[in-house]
Image (cartoon, rainbow, N blue to C red; front, side, top):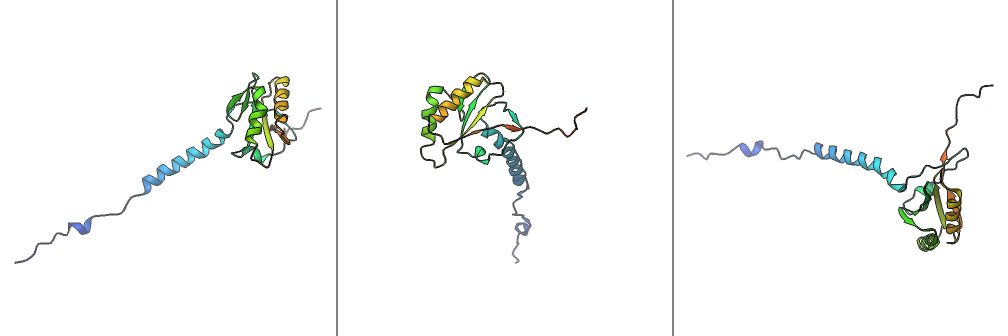
Length: 147
């Protein structure tokens, strides 16, 4: 009498298809790459344009202290709205453990100049050694001026 063997087990493919997983991961990577730069600027302001703008790489760091003044005169520290009276104390609390006492300011082009100066005074009252005013670089016109 012969033994009957099953040959079906040899035909089973046990490889894992990773192509769908790679596709999903690439889509997630692209989404995060697009959204991440938007998270740095928590308050939307129209920055003034300057011809001699200098790139400040430290302003984009995650632990950078950024003060924003909006068009309607509201003051924000990071993404939180603060009053001008509390601005100095909250900045000094954030800078307490840092060696670099630098604060960056984003002020709207159409913001009231007095509100911006009040925010600068609040920043200076916190003992800030360097204040960076953030602007956008003006695009230079390539067309020559007509006479």
